[in-house]
Length: 424
Image 1: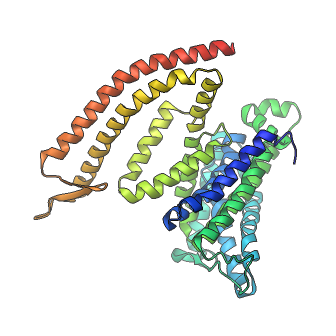
Image 2: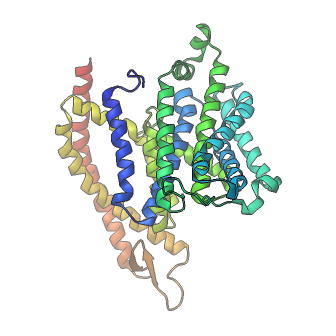
Image 3: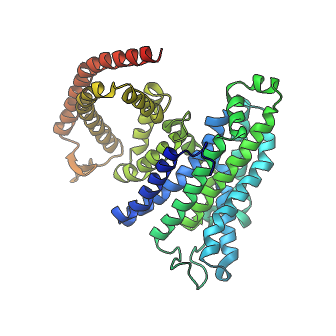
């Protein structure tokens, strides 16, 4: 393995991440947690494949679900073709079939979409994405209509080292293996001449053309490779859920992966990994606690755009720089001081949102039923107590956040000034 791409320290980091991923099912044996981890692994590959376009090449795509969805459908059909004649080893290799399908879609569609960059590329990708999504209902023979296409990942009578891919924990192991290989491959690509030229095309396409590179060809190759890894993610999704519907191809899927990548941080390789994990948790965990989770997600996304446009990874990078400069210890007390009022403010806001949502939804206002459940607690909407408590908590949290936050802001600006002064 190239020591320039994977030096010893980086190899230790990759090995530690792989060991942690393997150990997680041993620590959390709940079926729900294992299923959540499976979804995280799939979304990590999908988000990293999207960042090959947005973060590395500067291509804002609104139709990346095409490669993910086609990879999933082709994988499902391949699984059904294998049927009883196949075996666990064949099933384990099926995500590669999805990857090849995504790559082929990149070859067919990428040549058209990469003729232009910027807004034009975004609009073309949106149009093609909607076209393919609409075709899913027009060709039920391949896409299965509204019911989708289903299959059984446990095929054949023999097993592979005792594995049949039936239990969810075994499927998690397969997802970890493919996700790790795909992540390493995508990172290695960033260190190649093609990866470097993709960055040059992103930053200054005119200069890239001036030194003799065909910017359209670079964008085209990156779309093809991005489709390959998106198809692998789709293949893993097909094996994990054993059913694929037309919703996999729609704009919602493209929008989710865009948000994952942006929230995590498009300027950092590990940014989409953070975004994929966080958004998956919000979708499944918070979505299981409240019907208003989309509102929370929207507010969180708005907060990230306004306060940290570089994503969570950019915030981590700043903290790393402070730590290397010996300034992080100075900021930790301020972070801890701000954390408490922020938590109070969030508790008040959550209370107001949940009470308002329950009231607008007509919960707890019927005759003889005046109680409603907010998160895991029960409140009466027709009494002023819960509303006053939520308003009071919000006001207290807002005042404390402004008061303590202003002092923390002064310390933060001083630390950044010192950091930038040291760099200068």
